[in-house]
Amino acid sequence: MQTVEITAKTVHEATKAAAEKLGVTPDDLKITVLEETKGLFGKSSVRVRAEVVEAPAAEPSPQPGPTPTPVKEVPVKAGRRGAKAPKAEEPAAPVVEEPAPDPAPVAPAPVAAPASAPVEAKPPAKRTTRGRGKPEAKTEEPEAPAEEGKPAEAESDIVATAADGDRLTELVRELLAAASLQVNAKTGEVAGRYVNIHLDGKDAAFLVGKHGEVLNAFQYLVNIIAGRRFDNGVRVTLDGNDYRRRREDALTQLATKIADQVKQRGEEAVLDALPAFERRIVHKALSGYEGISTYSEGEEPNRRVVIAPVD
Image (cartoon, rainbow, N blue to C red; front, top):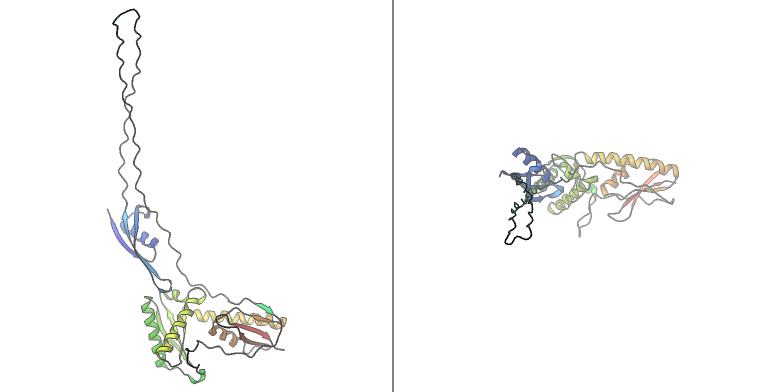
């Protein structure tokens, strides 16, 4: 029996590869999952054993026996003593046909799970209107929370250097290697206390996720580790496959559109909850918009930006 072991992302891909290697169709294979590994950020692999199922040899159909000749009964003449009735011929034994054995079951080819794919940024804001009122003072949004037990440092007092960029980029590469992801990390712009790191490569889509949720979580993790390892107040912003740039453009267009409606109606609008660095994008986009003021309200992680008209 021909057997081969294949490692692939899904059982379906492994079955297809095994069929091509053995020169048979997937329906001719019996698949046994030997090992299934689920990695970080949705990356997984599976190792299977594929065996060619040989069809059982067809048994020859039994030939029907000769048709038995009906026996004609001969009556005994009355009055003759000792007359014996002729012995009837015994009919041939009927041939019983045995049912053919059921064919060996063939494992159906499993259906592959849908591969993860990056999703384009969707405007997170769901515009709702509130009663007109005087807006609160605009608050600046921190990029990441300060560690417990330590006071938040003023952003103007911290300036990242090229050396900080190299150390943080090396930290990101260390985490990517631990997750077995094929992603390249490259130091980008260093501005103020922030070091921008660009991510690209075969598995970069896994780091973006739906609406950037995975990228935001990974960025938060990097900043937490960097704060404890280096303790210098420098922060990281991660961008995978230019998601941040596209996201910033989408938020800027959305904020401008809602600001036009707020100015026209004279009523406030509350955006959906956004992370701190995305709220800053909205504040920045509308900072020079005449007749409009922005501020934030609520508690994390449900803190929202309010776009209000200026009386």
